[in-house]
Length: 332
Image (cartoon, rainbow, N blue to C red):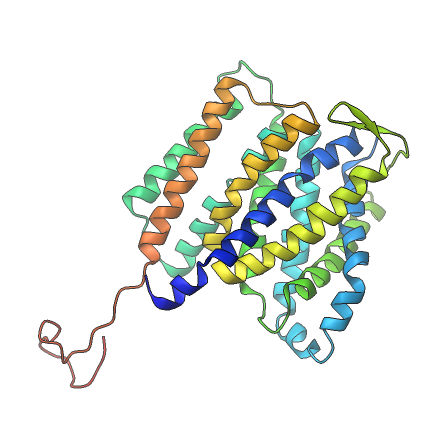
């Protein structure tokens, strides 16, 4: 492993990536608690994104002083991050929760690391190795087991498509977060993304693409009645502000591929949160499928890391590197 790569994959980046995964993982139970008392997916997404934009407004404005040129230079990345990485992921995921259990929806969403790897292959034209291909096949088998496509469980095809759409947007999030300008801090890029995402969700609600509706009544979490604002605050503060800021930081430190790999642990955190707070759990068969998905994605990521490992560059002056047609002093 090269020195720069070894520096990037350090303990700080990994710890922050795990914090991001854990805070993202509890978003499902928070949102589910609100939707069970009548909140629509559109209103839930707007509360999460709009509330986060307000929380980050002042810090973002302060951090952007003298750096608006960097925003103008990377406006495409900022817009894509907000539209897909934030708005698209949240809206599609929350809509999927109306059709699927939290654990199943998240397992489908977290096929996104596989999509990140496929994107990087297409962009850099790297041919998949045997380990990567085997991991991809194992992931697909795991999805079949989790969804029980033999027909014993009734899953809404709409819910599955929504969750897979969230996976595509989640893949964009990792790529855009890693590609964001180093001149913009994680807080600033997250704040800008939240503004873009909030405007997109508001526009969708105004034109009627998403219904809006909230209920200010008590809900239930972990079998205990709580006021509606408790899961709302948790969803905004923990599962959005903390989650996205740490996500951008870890993606910059680790790169999009490694960050998306570590983020797989969100499935574990989400499953524990759904079991503890929402009373949901996977069946034994689905648990086996979940293990296959995780092992498959790990295989894909390990194969990708092996493919991406930089080869040492050797000078033509080395005795075993000289060949006919080489020019003196040229490094190959």
